[in-house]
Image (spheres, rainbow, N blue to C red):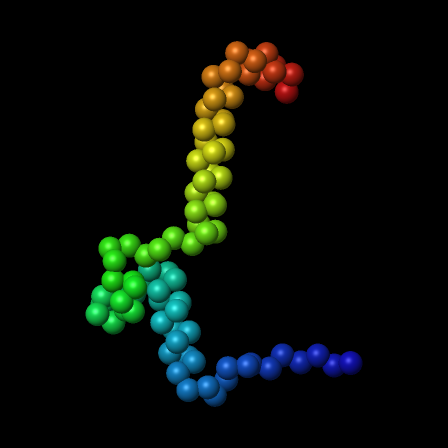
Length: 83
């Protein structure tokens, strides 16, 4: 069995430009799209959050709160000495 890499999008019209634009957007080197160029459901002041982003923010907030509460706990000082 011989495995060879073959570029799947080579020669596809606009692919190189799309890659360039995507890289610029990902690195923040491109200005935001004009509102009039966006679909109407994206004309609001902010983009809708993804479920994944909401879970990540919730987990971070929960961990921060737990860390603070644990550090203020009377048992923290005793158990920290065991480490």
